[in-house]
Length: 367
View 1 (cartoon, rainbow, N blue to C red):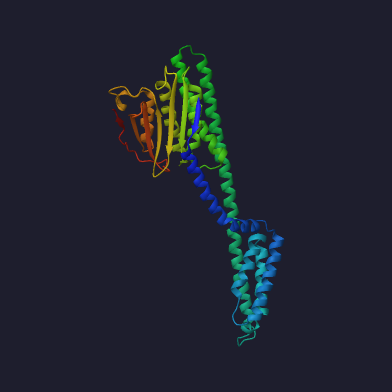
View 2: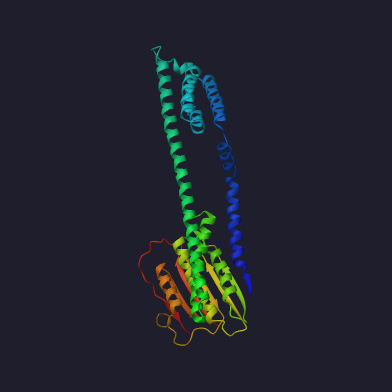
């Protein structure tokens, strides 16, 4: 067996990585600044807040033309976010006092002698309210992050257990198959194990990557094709596997369905396309876009004359047609102009698991 990876997908991946790298480089200063802010300790935040209050008060005193009361919110926010609500209140009171001292022209430009102190008290109250609201927001953010982390851990555990359960079922099927003497019955059990393995690997990829919304189906398709070719290539046949897969993101339900479809198409090609042949080539393609496309092509004898997908479909092909309708896709089964059979599955991008119950036509083209 020989596995080839063509340059089309390699070029696609290279271009994508280049674009992502350029974008990341442009955001690098922002990321570094956020990392530095994230490492600020409560003590350092309080010291920095006091320094900012002093600096703003000095500017307030030097200019004297307009009040800088709004700028005192910066140290209040800094102290509240990194040192807590009480620290924010303390900096708020300190900021109000600094405004009273640092801006004598505006703070004493009222007829009543107590009016400046009243204004400073109102500023302290406003700063305190801001500190209270900000500390509440910070606490809610921490609680939300903890909930997300717990849910992520729970989802990972669920996928891990599902994978383990599927592996147990696969082992039970293997033990049962060993007791069978009929080769056809053993083949049925092996095919069932392949389907279960496909689903188990998807769940394993999900909990390993930590991304539960979608996954890259290209890597799974490549791995599945190589595994099936290794285990199901007819004896005495030298098979060349050609995989051309663009990165295509799909949700879990679509990935499971597509995995089962690909499993059936590959098994069908290996069983019927290369039987009794010394050599052959199996091509698997996955193209992304507004309408994704997955193609499995062999260079075998092709479809028999008068073949009709709906009338002549076996169990495997019936599964392919049914699951294609399930993801609102379209299946096209035809003889390849270069010889052999070609099956193409068209399916929408990022398809939701809640799909409409429509049945697009199944096309079967014969030469």
